[in-house]
Amino acid sequence: MAKDPVCGMTVDEKTAKFKSDYMGKTYYFCAASCKATFDKSPAKFAGGKSGHSGGCCCGHC
Figure 1 (tube, rainbow, N blue to C red):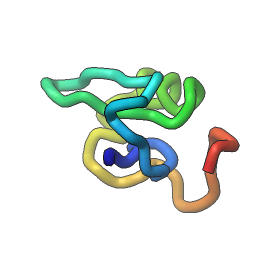
Figure 2 (figure 1 turned 135 degrees about the horizontal axis):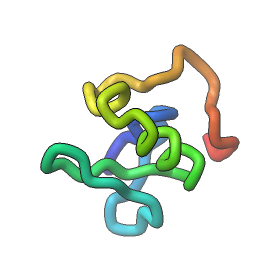
Figure 3 (figure 1 turned 90 degrees about the horizontal axis):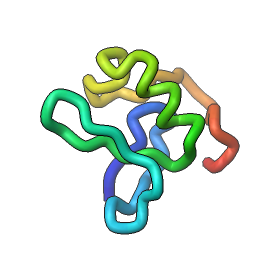
Figure 4 (figure 1 turned 45 degrees about the horizontal axis):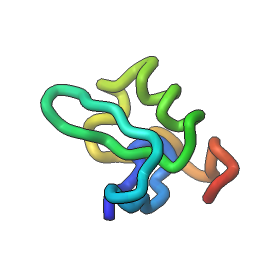
């Protein structure tokens, strides 16, 4: 399982519909909105911490 770097939700890499590659690593997302947020500023989220201090931005968690 992977962690969505935007909202922090757990995502199954095998079934994830949304993913992006950044600096040689694949990131998995629970929703298109999280992927779009990541794609706008990947360096902000690629450090391993969720970009949000609380609550979910995508409505899936």
